[in-house]
Image (cartoon, rainbow, N blue to C red):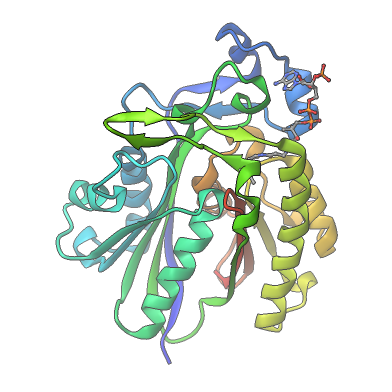
Length: 320
Ligand code: ACO
């Protein structure tokens, strides 16, 4: 049997750190108390003009490869989860591949918005377990600041930019213990960027639109359900999970999910306060933070969870 295990993690945040009060200076009609009390967000990092998802992803990927002790040429699968690709095409994965100097690996993007990383990691695991590939680079990279309407205070305060990466390798024992992915397109309208490209122009609305309360309720329900589903598949009791890393959208969603799993908050990795919501980058950014500061140790059970536009949701339970 071939299994898949995480060999290295890495992440990168743009240097421009923006506090809630800095948003007021940018002209957003808001205040720190409103943002912190409703979301837990205190700061986010925003990309410089022209800084792209593949550029952020490159640094995260290099750090993950370094931890794995692998070179870029040794990677045979590159998957980038992003909803803010550099171009319509080629894929951000191909652009990242060129920047890394890798030739010949399978490379493609996955678009599942804030569930993107969990989707991409699950796909990579299936490639590795099939025996067709040995070493995957799985990246979540976003510049959501490009698709925010800075006149819509209900959304622009919530998001940030960044990238996270994992090197997933073939192994003799797991590794990834269980995965579960879901979607329900009937809910596409509660979170979307409804514009498209037509005749060389963006037709429709190029900015993120959200029904915040509908998203909140949906996210709390499905994150708890999919966490339990993954535990059942792996035959692991929720209380035996050492670390929960849910998508970092909102501290109240995170707390509600932990409560429904019966996990205390000291078993939950929280970065939303410092990163905001970085969509597909949020889970690998949080994973990298907790591995590098020594909280997550080899052999511990870690539950990763995503939920986002589509609607999409999913979870990966792994032994680190
Ligand atoms: N600063 C100050 N006031 C604001 C701001 C702001 N940034 N944004 C909205 N308000 C005001 C509104 O104008 C409104 O004022 P009014 O009552 O005078 O009309 C008031 O605050 C309440 O607005 P609501 O939108 O009803 O606020 P709510 O309590 O629902 O909180 C929030 C909004 C934080 C977005 C909440 O719905 C939420 O957390 N939803 C989850 C959505 C989420 O996390 N999305 C992330 C993307 S999805 C994902 O990643 C899964």
